[in-house]
Image 1 (cartoon, rainbow, N blue to C red):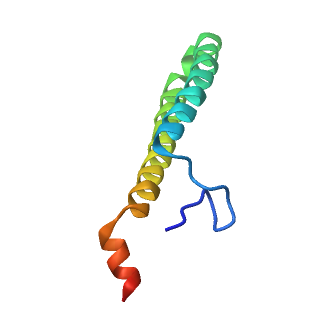
Image 2: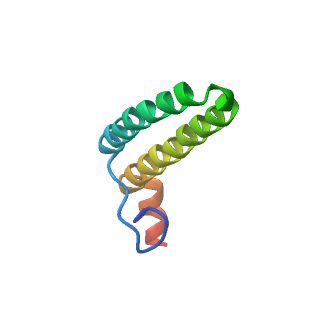
Length: 84
């Protein structure tokens, strides 16, 4: 199974290990931005909390897609379905 980001012509999904590294890099970058936003506008904490939750959800979706891509490459059930 060929799993890609965003569309059928998007870039291929990274391996789970590569995806976790990419997510970690993106979260480190976002963390400094979130801290800066909170320091500058503490009254917008609720908005920031929503943004952080959305970021983690998006990253979780990417990791799950990566796991799916890897599992589907080595799945006896998928191989059996292809033979039908």
